[in-house]
Length: 212
Length: 252
Image (cartoon, each protein chain N blue to C red):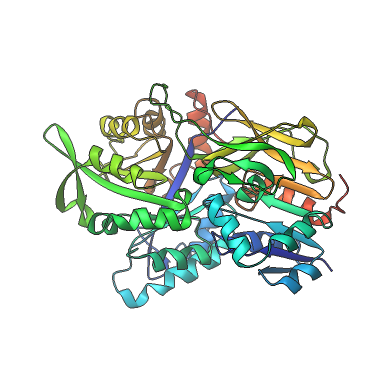
């Protein structure tokens, strides 16, 4: 039986993430927790995140989860979602500049709201956008190229190593919408809110052995 | 390719039951929020909005249960509005599975609520609902279903709400609401041009072309409608097909 832990950093809607996993993996044990022992016992881990990245790291440190999460990121299949993906990069310009976990080379920037631009680029980037898969990863299995997923974010990632980019999307320019390396797969969009294709992605993650 | 314009059906919920005559012939219990939400999910709605119109505060917790049940079965974004007064109300709805909350009167009573909520939960889950009515050559923000004016200019108010951290504006024309005459396109365009955040147009949709006009002329980022979908006049898919034919990017 799969033991899936959704890391609880006290922000956002984790109920939906857990429910989506229960839907695609009815036999799995799904837990939303920040308990260290549970994290150690999990065989796959979901690193979600909403809101500001500064608060995300603060919550991580308050719960003394930084090292355990780093350990998980080097050993078990991990799915990062939204801020849970952005946190894996070197740095974000949100909250006056914030160091990331540095597992992927690249930086996180704010979408530019230029008043001169017509039509204006509305921020947050909110809604269903195409995801162009750029790698043949097991987590993409059965998901058609350019499928739409639900996004909601004001900051976007640019990777400096193209080999880690698993997908890109476009909003006033191209940005990274998924990254992957070894046992880590992370997405900017919300698969738990992305209808059939989102559930398919979660199902694939549950079946994935962590080998890219 | 690119970001799609969202089509959002809106459901009024009173003490846990969908009201205002949702009439899907093939749903046995048209008052069941889960059944109705699932139907819209199957039709490829981009989001679903629930408006809690429960009058008695003692029955308010029912909405939490509704959200929890819907969120366990429907995997698209859910917004809940109505009766939200404080941070704790928002917290409970998000924990139950709502993705966004829509704040209306409480933002007027205490604008700091929007600032605090946005800082605490992130702008992405804070929608500010504005009920606007034309007064001379501008629009004013109204409360109590369009019966009471606040005297606040709707354009200025939307800019202020965006500045305070709203992630989105849900803009309803009280002149058009329930008329089926189409959105107030001038209002929609004015607000959409004034704020750097997405604007959802609402109030007055009677035809599929109204939806398209909200985007093409009004500049809306999303369109919300209730009755044209509830009475089975059109499906969400038909609405998307029409918008696509008019050159609007949709998620079909």
